Image (tube, rainbow, N blue to C red; front, side, top):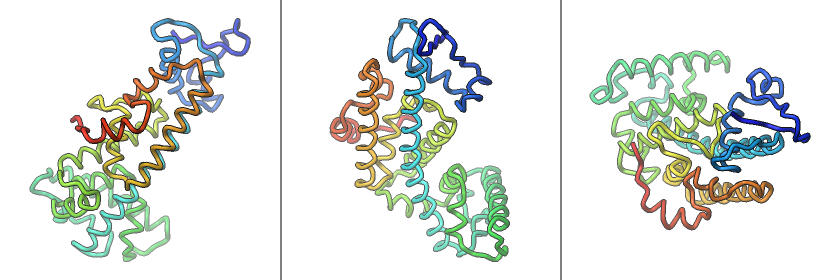
Length: 278
């Protein structure tokens, strides 16, 4: 049971019903935010939290979403560019190179899965040509690839021939194809979680990976300078939130994310010893 009070502490009038949240422009996931916030503040005790505290926590998460969405977009843009580049070099400069089953690893991936991917790409290409009023002969593979959603481009990489996968992974200084496929799919899972406006500190993947795993994966696929800038913004955002929200248990917030309270520990203890759980 989540109890919410307004500025008048005697009046528990803030409704967490989906219809009431929608009227205020808030997502249904506010119920999740309220449960997590109550535990962070009061641990195992059940006390009411204020409307102000809940909204503050929600806006902190919105800022986290914006920060992670930007860095995920950076990786997606990089992956899209590499896929377009090597498909053009390996095959031809037409987006239709994505529609040939022979351009994929049919010896490793079930043909049914590849045909499902080709159907999605074909539908997207039709929308692309209609949206930009282009003739079907328009051959900007790069332009088209950058209109594809993350789930499709990640699947293109997964189904690509090993020669293309290897060339793409060299850009990230990675050699293990299986691990890189898992990283791409994990970041896609996190991307989908973000789109649902769920509470980021409480993120858990299918295999119970958490937010620290997201940072470790990003550390592997984002240029070092860009990643350090992102990490600096991340810690600054968290500590600014904690400074303005002294009632919150800082240790429990970092424990929830499985992240150390300073970035030095990430680089010295966690990143060098990172093992991706599958």
